[in-house]
Image (tube, rainbow, N blue to C red):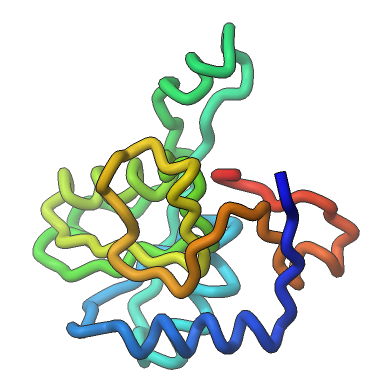
Length: 164
C-alpha cells in the first residue's frame, strides 16, 4: 500500500475544506480517540463548538482470520451517556475512514441513544470502505494511500493507527 505523509500546512487546508462543507450547526462534537483528537480540536475551534465529547473504541485483535477480524463487534472503552446525545445534532469526528468500522459503530450508537449524528473525517478511502454507499457525511480528501499525519511523525510512528 502506498503511503502519504501529510504536513501541518496540508492539515490546515483539509480542515478549511471541511469547514466550507458544513450546511448546519451542531450542538456537540463527539471525537473518536485517538485519531480524531487533533482534527476534532481544530474543527471545534473553527466551528465554535464548545460541547466536546469523546469515544474510545477497540476491536479485538485476537481473531481466527482476516475476514472474521472485519466482522468482530466493537468494544466501547469510553462513550458519553445517552442523555448527553439524545435530541442533539452530533458531529462525529475521526482522522480517516478506512474500512469505516470505527466511525460507523460510533455513529450507530449515537443514533440508538437518540442523537442525530453526522460523520466527518480528513481522509476517506473508498477502496477499503466496508459499508457500500455509506460514506462520511463530510470529508476533505479521498485517497487509496496509507495516511501518515504530522502528529504521528513526531512520535516516531511509521504507521497510522486506528481504522487503517
